[in-house]
Amino acid sequence: MKNTKPNKPIKIGINVLFLSLILGAGMIFFDDDYQNDHKGWILLLIFWGIRSVISLIKNVRDVNKVLVVADLLLITLAVGFLCWQAIGNWS
Image (tube, rainbow, N blue to C red; front, side, top):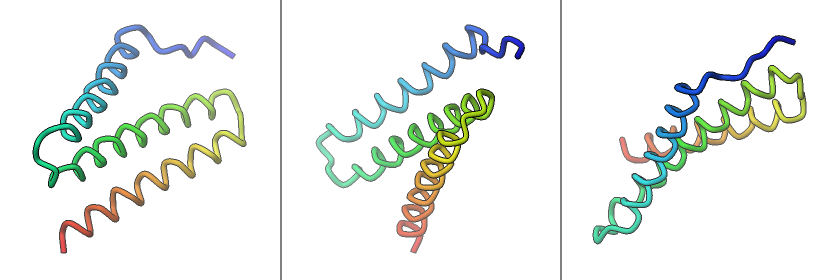
């Protein structure tokens, strides 16, 4: 199998995205306004979904079927919770 390691700028960009999502969620959780904590949970769900998609891609490359199924389940849960949150806030 050929070398499929991501190059350094992409890896740094992904880590910056993850750090900004976690810091944003932390700032929203620990501010004085308790009514916007659901936005922090949304940021954590987005982090969880993106992390699971990246893990899914790595596991598909490595042909690890059990972890692929687990990642698909986690992605489905994250998208389901995000849709449930969106429908709940919309109506």
